[in-house]
Image (cartoon, rainbow, N blue to C red; front, top):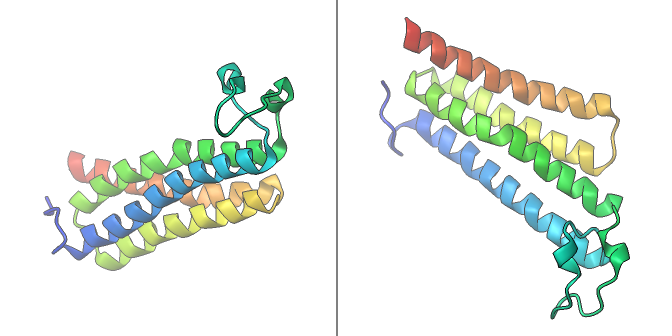
Length: 154
């Protein structure tokens, strides 16, 4: 079993990639809030129509789906469906003590795939483009999980 700590360059690779993915997940949430405020629409719940310091004049139309806001919400949901698996599989992968170059290729490859997915979604690329970015990231996570599983069972 490989030690976990910042003296381990494989773990550092994981930590950098994981921190970037934390920023991606949290940033996407804030992007959704920004878009809701900018468009004054796309609210998610009926209680959001209560008057407050930000929404001084609530209107039922604010609950209607607004693609500008909903696109960001879908991107956030997609992150939440994919990035946690990376965190788990990546940590298990680190414990197998893989070659550093392999760990860097896979982990930074995942970050790059998620960044490309973000750009593809934000710029309204076709499903095929988004699916390609998703597939690359997904295959990386699957590989790391299988690598860890094989190491555990052998």
